[in-house]
Amino acid sequence: MILSHRAIQKVMVEHLPEAVTEHRFPSIQRIADVVYFPKKIIFEVQCSPISLGEVQRRNRDYSSLGFTVIWILHDRIYNKKIITPAELYLRQNLSYYTSITPFGHGFFYDQLDFFKEMERVYQSAPYLLKDLLPRPLTKTPLLFPRKLKRRPFYLPGDATDLLIKENLGKWAWKIERKLFQKWTLKKIMNELLHSLLYSQAAPKNVLSSHKD
Image (cartoon, rainbow, N blue to C red):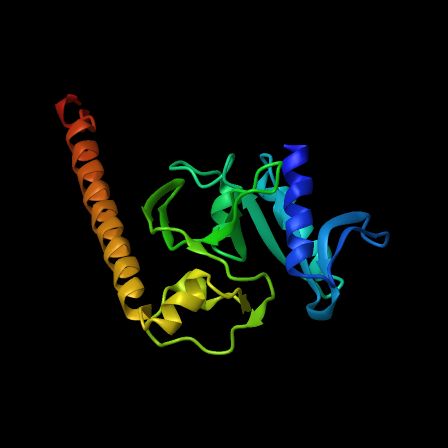
């Protein structure tokens, strides 16, 4: 996937002419994939598996220098039905997908998705990004998906941008709420069933059968 990684970087620089690739940050011993200095944004291109711990360390290291990290995940590895803790964490924060091949064919995209533990239980059609220049997210509708409300930026064409422009925030919020209520009810029922089975299986007090 090294060739895909380089192809993605090349396409990103075409979208962001002021960006630089493979920039070294000696103070934190990191090499950033793509840096857009005007907005202090770092794009980390991920074409291979990564641990949650490493994701958090990179975010923390770059944040210590005042940079915000946006992750670009290649869908050859990511965007599957069953996900990893790292991908779950990234989808709750700033991340997007790409399908770009080693020959530079493909696109960057976002989607509306929700998860139950490590399973993707809702997935919209892909929303193609129009460009990679981050815009500050200053205000969202009252009824809006929680994970999107937390994002400091959005990219033109992403889920946040589309939901706001098309006035679909309430629709997406209802999907999120319905799924959450369903999971909560199922969890309560499972806990009640577990308690009932445990009480029936527990040994009876045999002390009453002992004679003095």
